[in-house]
Length: 387
Image (cartoon, rainbow, N blue to C red; front, side, top):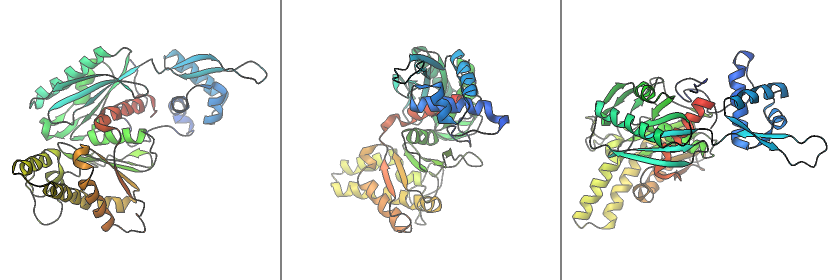
């Protein structure tokens, strides 16, 4: 079984990928990751190419590559066709068929979703299970069962399991609080890892989703807001995920928006962001309008007000961090249109125009699979130090 040299909680306060040499006492695991990242990102290279691109010596690269080949992570592809004089170089690459990843998305209120994912983050098999209102131990049993089912569907050894779950998750993969699943201090990482015998990484679903968006090519500071059964945000600053002192960074769903009261939230307060913009509430409001024969303008009014409330909450975050881009993840039929336009207008009106004139708020292009794809990034970063 592969174990991670990077710690149990993927990307917990460290950069997602290696980018340069480090001090001697940290060198081997870091430089190993640096070699893997170079091959993972750039594709087939010779050992000399890798040495040149990483700044490592050829001896160091040859030693690390021999180790990685022995572990089945790197493979020789044969000699390069080269017009230059001398012996042609042998090309090497990450063996992209050597391992697969199991990803789970626990963020939906009616089902648990999962997939088998290859090292290039392509989904190669899927499995879902109805939640049917399960909470507590029953919900945990469904998660373990789905993980086992997906592991059985894998056609290569499982590198690890990545799980995106609602709630606050600590560095040890303990779900400190997930009310929708009835979990308090649930040791989910240990339970799934013990059942499957492979490394497991667990994080808040929005924090997992932002890894997928970052991995899709955006290297800038990034805020992703995930709107579903609840509302949460994932944040990457300087290439590092931000988790917060108590692992609750991005928990914006229970921030009260304004001083005008508002709908009652499940937490007991009135006017929480979640009470304004969570999908079940929006769907119920729109269904009521349709049942009453309401016009399209009434539907748009509901979505505009929800978007305005989101903009109010995001404005201080955008202003404090000078963000250039905010990404929305959720049902496009609700969030792309009147909701989006109202959120943008509110953000612009509540921040300094000259500092945020290029601010962009957009829908993710990764659709409903964003948490599953992020779970693969989490495992790749946690186990191999690549993304």
